[in-house]
Image 1 (cartoon, rainbow, N blue to C red):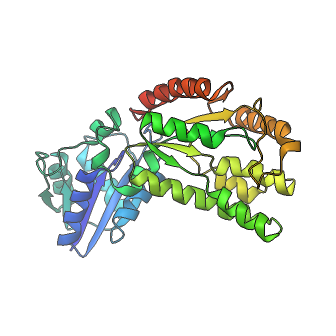
Image 2 (image 1 turned 180 degrees about the vertical axis):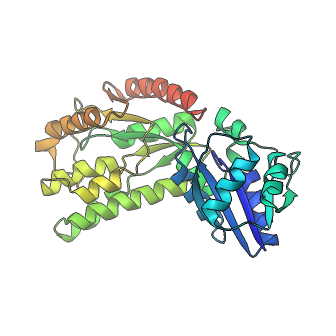
Length: 323
């Protein structure tokens, strides 16, 4: 038996997963059609990838929107033409599934139409992400969690601010993976290689995603892969295309750059006092070029935290709604 599920899945939630899991238990093959429309706030490729991670046994496809949600006959022709076959069973949680199935000559199975098993909808998630957070699967959480990133040149107070901000907001703090990697490089006397920065960037992203899955929807990140590009430039004199591609996978909802007006403090590993002010400007210039919303924070520890909190609260409130 071949089953089919279709929808926007914007974003996928546990109601969608119940629908697909039900189809998988009743059919030998299940096609999931993710509707692609450029007006949707989350790209179809991302929505499809999240579903693939949660439902590896399903065949997840991206299908173009025809712009006629209520036209079951047109959607029946579109879907069967896309799949090059007629499904045996349509699974849905909405009345449209009944007429769509009939137009394809397929059976229909209604799943939790009253939302008793999973009292959630994509509209609810888009309206208040944090209230609906527990209805999201781990890959979706990893993709949607807000990132407040603290970055800056050496000995400018990035870790102090990141930890203070995370504690004040009562959210998860993502430590800087590269620091431990740097300790290994410097204490062993090894030379930096391009591959080291790729590993640091990918490890940082993996750690960030892992913590996002167990978070409440907000992370404070002590640096990220975008910043790793500048450290590659610092030690190797250039930034490679591969490093740029890794950095492009970062999510940054707010970037806080720590100022270089404070005294340099040697912790036994730092070796960049001579380049610190120049590197600070690299961060500012790179942020301007990227179009990322950012603020340079200066002043005492308390002043920096107070300003960071105002900016963070504003970002979190704006990030509550998707789209």
